[in-house]
Length: 65
Length: 160
Figure (cartoon, helix red, strand yellow):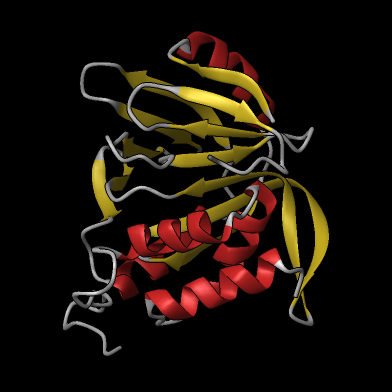
């Protein structure tokens, strides 16, 4: 997904509005505990990711990958 | 497991959080959206996807949409700024330490006061998610927000 001019990622109509919400929803959907939530932060840090991509990372963390 | 149920006793919370004071912040970095992490106290090694990194004896994760970093009460950066500005200034928290925590219950403004006249102001939201998470040295996590509430959960806790 391309960045918006302000450097923030845009949300498509099928995605949660807002980047924080996108990460929160992915974490919640995967059922991450607190330590795994920290891991998710570290893995998505500095990247431009869609909700689906974050969700896949969250699911990998949940599965111990 | 929930260790401390959601409540609004911030005097009790600040007593619990006093363990963070005087510990040096050794890393601070943006993660995603307007969220960022800083680690303080003793360094613990961890490997993320083959890369060596560190977590702190204590960790603070800012996860809400609205925050400001001020120096001498003048804005340094806030969550409305461009990402490159957020990334640039968030790293400057490293080397400081926490002096105090406070909250204005009416405005829901939660403030973390740091050395070098820095204040990190976080507006607690009405979101269903926490606004910030703080890892204690016993590995339990304090969730602050939504609103004027906080709770403590174990590291393996998963929200319903």
